Structures are given as structure tokens and as C-alpha cells.
Length: 553
Image (spheres, rainbow, N blue to C red):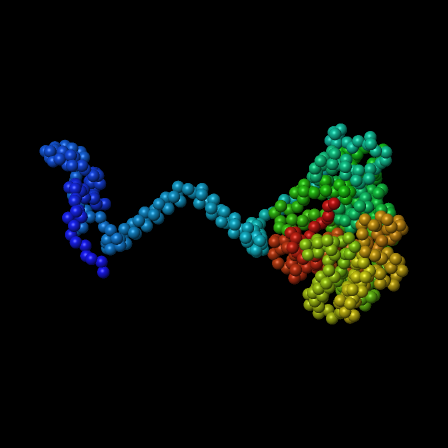
């Protein structure tokens, strides 16, 4: 153990006298936190008589305050007092008033935020439940009944507008007349440079058959052009100079003479002004986008209608053209009548059973690729047609007590589809097509192989003419177009929207029958799937609108 330390005098602490200034955080004296020197303290003592006059030495509150004093600041949780809740309420009230004043001071910010929330909810609702928005809009519109304004009858101008030389096609670089469709397209682009509207037409409107598209694609465009000619009171003409299917009159005749009896096509040496001229306007599949594009839609679509209802006038124009203007000639009509008679005999029908006794299926193969993403760059699967065929027969035919087996008219460019459908529908089903006809005149016009537009022109001209006749007969039996009152008609058409045959089949069925209208409030404009007789198996109603009148190229 180490020895204890003894008292050492030298170790005693020698403290130098110093002045200590007490400090406290609660002192309110201005110099309480400062350190005074000895001389300053002596000076203070000498100036006691002048304390009241020295501003630095004045002190209204004692340097140290008793904790029992009223001036002692409260500290800690216990020092809050019994009225703490009341103070908190007053503070919260002041905060609420501050927020309210802020809201009143910035109404624009509040309104903008509210509109942003409403817009966001509308966007979400349009993606998740678009039918709710459409129902709300249609309900608001139907509640305000209005009398439709009658469309004034256009009057033909007696005097043609003056010709602008800039709108005349120059033939300096050409050695033939008329120009072919691609050359007309180039000249249109040089003069116009944009897609034109349908206003102010010439005395004649000519549709040029060019052979660059399929038969039904031409007929769909021709139907609209004929409708425009009626609308503006002009003569409608057909030019088949470059058509690769023979002469147009070999298959079809046009009955729309126009307001000028005996009007003929302009002479070959004449010059055509474009787009507004003295003689004619020429439209073909390659220039249709300049005439039937956005301006056409803005002019003739119903701006107050929804989806299909926007296209009602365009639909009616096509229907009038296909039923009154464009008709098969006598020879083609005889083939159609023969095919209908054989179909009725095949199905075991008499003259009293003429409607809704069979359903039609059009299966496009060859270069007819699907429109939906599911069938992008490939043909629509045969299972889609089979599923729709069975469901449609049960919904429209069996529901009315029809005990007859499934009856189908098949129109397809691929003859192998016949055996595929027969195996899918079963041996009890009854399927008829031109290829299965007992009439040799019908057999030879049936499609022998899948159709490719780029390869069609390479076929012999006689084969192209026969295949064109077959397509017209197929379309007549498929859709019921050009049927007389006592002729056999289909009860439903099943097809894919990628084909112009499908688009025109909806026109042949009629508006209400095709889209199932007349059983509910149809202002929303979608297809009534419960009553529709036009069944589309590719997009299946995902397009808006689900039907189009023609295709632009």
C-alpha cells in the first residue's frame, strides 16, 4: 500500500481575489452577461448618485428572480399549466384562420387544382369505364330535344367559275391521255399539296378504276364518289381505261345519269382543270385521300353523334349507291339468280322461306392480314369464325325455334377453307360455296387459290374477268345485296374488318339489322351485340367506331 500524502504547505491553493459576475439565462438586464473589471466596479460605486441617469446601469427586474414570482418563466411539461389545452385550441384556431385566408387569397390556384383532379379522374374513367362517360354525355344530349334542320337542295351553277391557270394540269411531259392513276396522283400533289375538301365540284365527277386495289375496295370508294355527285348535282362517270378486270360494263352497269341528259366523258384531247374546273374531277384509289380524307370527314360526319352514329350519313350514301346506282349487268344478274336458287335447293327451302335461313361467313386469306394486334401480319385464325358461327346460330336462329341444322354460305379466296370449316362444324352442318356448286358456270368463277393483289395482274385477262364475276356473285349471296323481294337472303354475316367485303356487307344488311339497333337507346353508338346481324371477328368492337365505309390507300 502506498503511504498517505501528508499536508504540504506548498501545495495549498492560492486564490487570487477576483470579481465574479453571476449569470442566469433568465436575466433581463442588458449587461448581466458581461464581465466587469475591478476598476469598473469601483466606478459604479462612485456613481451611485447618478445611477438613475446612466442608461447602462438601469435594471427594472431583479437579476435573480424567485421561482415563485409571477415573472419566472414556466419551463418543462409540468409548467404548461391547466390552461395549456385552451392555448393549443387558440393556436389551432389561428392556424385554421390562416389556411382559410390563404385559400381566399388564391382562388385561381384552388380552381386549377380542382379542375386538375376532375381531369385526372376523367382520364382514368375513360380508360377503365368509357361506357360511363358516353352514357353521361348521351343522357345530357337526349334530354335536350331539337328539331333537325333540313338540308337545302343544292342548285347547279349556271355559270362556271373563272379558270385559274395554276389549277390546270400541264400535259407537256406526257404523250398519252388520259393519264394513268399514279400520274394523276403526282399532278394532284403538285397542284394541291394537301388533302382537299369536297366543296365546289365540276359538272361531272369521274371515278377511275385503276387495278391497284381489290374489287370491293374500288366499289366502296365508288359508292362515296357517286354519292358526292348526287349531292352536288353532277353527272357521275366511270373510266375503266386502266382497269385490269376487263370493261366495267362486262360486270356492272351504272344508273345515275345526272342533271345533264346525254352527258359524255370529256374528249381525250381536252385539258382537265384540278381540283375545281369547267369539266370534271377525276378520283381513283390513289387520289381518293385528297378527296375523302379529313376534310371529307369534317364535312359529312355528324359532329354530335357518337361512334357509329357519326357515320350514319356516309353509310346512307353508300347504301343508296350500291342499291340504286351500281347494279350487276344482265349476265352477272343471271349468275347471281342461279346461285341463289341452287342455295335454296341445297338448304331444302321453298319460296316462303326466304329470310334468316342461313348465315354467311367470309374468310379472307392470301394477303388479307388481320387488323388487330393479335393478328398483326397474319391471317385471322379459323377458330374465330367457327366460334362466332356457332354462337350466332344459337343466338339468332335457334332462339326463334328453328330446328334446322347449322346452314352456312361460305365465301373465301382459299378453297381449302371449305373442308376446314366442315370438320370444325361437324358433319350435320350444311355448308355451300361456289366451288361446291353443281353448276359448271358457277364452278369456273370460284376462286382457285388465295388472292394476292400484287399477283393478280400477272394472270391471263380471261381468268381475271372470270374471277371478278365470281367475286360479285360471292358478295351478292354473302351479303344479300341486289336481292329482290322474294329472293333468298342471309340472316347474319360473319367476317373480319380487314376486308372491304366485310365493310360493304354491313351496308347491304341495313343499318338497324347490321348493328342491332332499335331495341334500346342507341345514342352511344356502339354495336348491340345481342341483336346485331353483322359479326366482326377481328377487332371485335375494339375500334371506335367499329365500322368504316371505305379504305384509303
